Length: 609
Image (cartoon, rainbow, N blue to C red; front, side, top):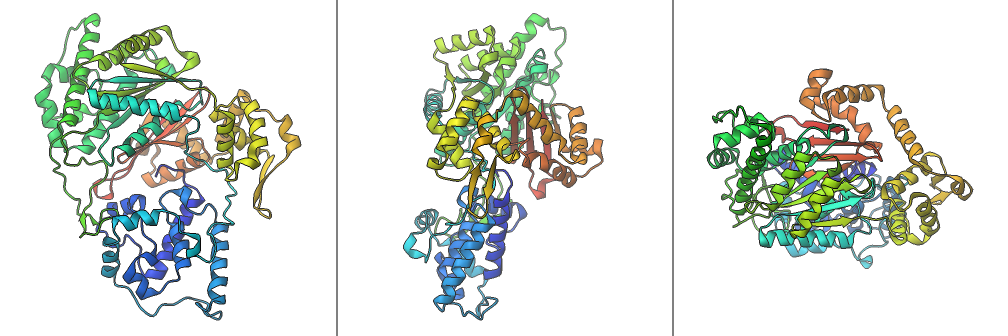
C-alpha cells in the first residue's frame, strides 16, 4: 500500500487470476470477512503452489509455472515482474520448455486438470507450510530448479519510482540510536533534520520510522505528524493541532475507545480538558468526551494562557505516555477473522490481529511525533515544543524538519538549548554523493550503474545532487523525448546532443508542474478547486456535501493527480495513508483514512498548501 499504483498492480491482479484458474479459488477465498481478505492481499505471503504438498500432488502444475505465478504475486512491487513483456517472455519460454519436454502436448490449447482440490486441503497446506519453509520461500529460487532464469527480458518501459533512501545511512543510524536512548532512559529527545527544499528531510524521517518499526518485531508503534504552514505562521499551535488530531486517531485505533475515554476523564481534571477543547488544541477530543463534563475557562489573561496551555498539553501527553508504558491487556475481538498467522507457523488457524493492535506486553515503545517545516512555527509553538521535550513525565521521540535556508534565530536558539541539555540532535542533510546519484538513476531506469555513470555526472552538475531535482530532471528528459525506451533493444536510449544543452531550473520546474496540473481532466481540476476552498486538509464527507459526488467518484477523480506524481504517498499509519508532494515553494499531500467495510465508508482527506 505504500507504493504508487502502476502496471505492477495489474501484474499482481493477473497473477491472482492465474492462481484461481489453476486452483479453482484465490488464496484468500477462505477468509471470513472482506477486511481479512484485504489484509491478506496486503500482508500475507503466499507460498509457491509446488511448495504445498497436497495441492502440488493433486494438480501436478509444472514448477516453472508455479514460480512465474509466485513472482507475479509478490507483496513488494520491486520483487514482481516490472513489465507485462517480461511475463509474456517467461510464459513463452515456459511453453517451449514444457512442449519440448513432453510435459504438455504441443496440441493442447487449454491446460486442464483432472483432479480438483478441496479448499479445506488448500488451507491445511497453508497452515502447515511452517516458518522455516516460509523463510526459504522468500529467497530467490535457485537457478538449477528452473529451466531458465526468470525475468531475463523483464525491463520496465517506465521510470521506476523507487522508495529507496540514498546516502543517508549514517543519519539513519543516529536517529535509531537516539530512539534507543529514549526507550532506555524514558527521557524525550528531539531530532532536528536540516536541509534545503527537496533534499529528502521528510523521506529520511519516514524511512527511519519504518526501520524503527521493523526493528521492534511487530510491536505497536505510535507515530503521528503535523505540519506548519507558511501562510498560517502567525496562528498559534497550528502545526500541533494537526499532530494531536492524528495522535488521538492513533490511540483510538490501537486501544479500546471506552478505555481511552475512561483514562483521559479520570487522569485529566475538568479545567485541563476544558482548555484543550475550548482552544481546539486536540480536534476530535470533544467528540470522544462528548458526555464528560468539562470546565469552561473564562477571563484568562493572555500572558497566563500560554502557560496554562503548555501545562494542559503536557498533562495530556504524560497520560498517553503512561498508557504506552503500562498498556491494558488486549481486549480486542477478532472481527470474526480467522487466518493462519501469515502462513508461517504449523498450527491451527489463529485469530487475526492487525499489526497495529497491541500485543500482551509489559510496555510499548515510546511514541514518535513529527513536525514538518518548523521554520514557520510561531513563538508559542516553539515554547510548547521545548516544554514537551524537557518534561520529566513525558516520553516521546520528536522529529522536526527545518529548511536550512529559512531557519530563524528563535528556532535555532531553542534547538541549541535542547542540544546543551543533551535532549536534541541537529542532523544536516547535504547533497547526494556521485556514487549515490548514479545508483539512484540506475534504479529509476532499472539498469546497471555502469551504463548510467556518464548520465549521472551530467545530472549531478545540473542538479547539485538534490534528490527532488534529480527525479524531476529525469522526468523532464522523458517528457522532452530526450530519454526514451527502445522496445526493440529493451533498454533506455539517450540523445546526448540534446542533453548537453538541456537545463532544469526553478522556473522550468514550476512550468512543468503547472503543465501537469493543466493536463488533468477538467472534472478533476474542478474537484481540486472545490477542495482548496475547504482549506489545507479536508475529507470526503465535506467534499461530498460540496460537490454532490460519492466516495467512489471522488477517489476516481483524484487518482490522476496521484498517478502523475503531483501527489505521492509518503507515510503509512493504521487505516491511514498520507501522501505528499514537495516543490521548492509549495507542498501538497493526500491522506486516506481507510475504514473496514464493516465499519463504514472510506474517508479521504487532502492537504494542500
